[in-house]
Image (cartoon, rainbow, N blue to C red; front, side, top):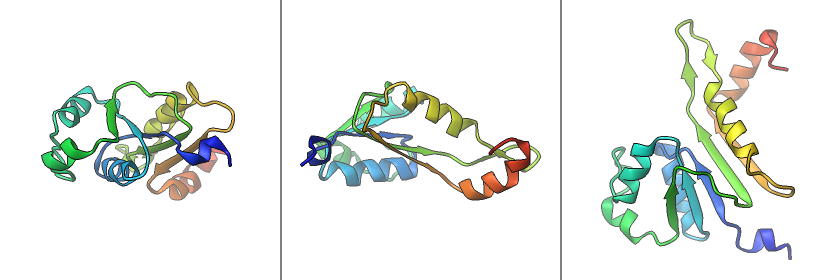
Length: 134
């Protein structure tokens, strides 16, 4: 069997409501290296505090396979959760998606797997095709 699939370390980027829950579920089976660009968020989670109340202090303390960082580490699997932003003229702002892609691409290697979640991506694509989204 491929060693990448046996016990892959998983990098989860974006530790908001969705990302943190995904990190918890993933950490039940795998080591997870969790990343967020917000230093305050990482500091809170390292101190076993979650301002979104998705996880209790006890859950954060007892999760042995959760690691929190502001630096994306080399892993074999990357799951990136980015927010859906709408600008002042009701258009999707894809800046978080572009920035996340650039960050992950710096550490991707051959055979790595990257999954990105961006809410309403298809609608954003359809709405922006005339602006060069192809």
